[in-house]
Image 1: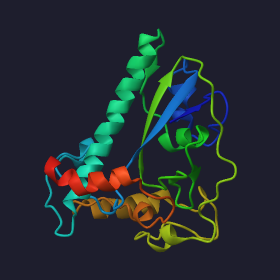
Image 2 (image 1 turned 30 degrees about the horizontal axis):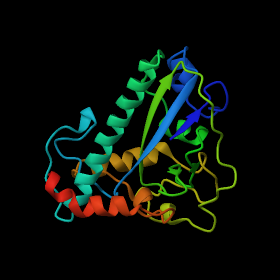
Image 3 (image 1 turned 60 degrees about the horizontal axis):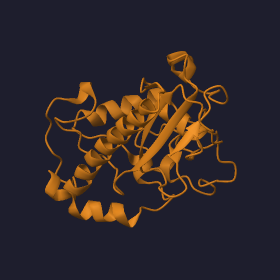
Length: 225
């Protein structure tokens, strides 16, 4: 968990998603990360997908690993739980809070949870890119963290670019100029039609390690589905 200052940083956020634009009373942004499955690639989205446009049933691919599918669902539920607990604590202390939509990756960077990788994913020092982010805005003035300065996980590596099925990256440029949103979104839409969700950039990233507790959850998650 980290805390970002909405009055500083956030230079690269889209104007309509700036915390103080979304909620003018915001004085602190609470950002947290929940570990995801080690195998976050082409995850089945199915009828219980968290996005409204992906609620239609689709066939389960033959190569899906049910434990990872279950764990990813648990991670998203855990993120929602942490969010609710955080808001309850703040409000019990007399502060207001909000979970209106802002750009989570930018908030995570500003809160010092990780840095932008070549793919544009947030790379956490321990978890790498396999994490589920959550955000709560509050009018409480919390001591703020700062972005990481001496963490360079992508030096000498371009696995995310090599494994992108859309070829949406230009290796000669740095993120965000290196990434074509249009190319990426168009290819992902094609993949979605087959009931899959492309996470090749995340799955191919060698940065970080997965805690033993998450490995244990993977081995036991089958009972949850």
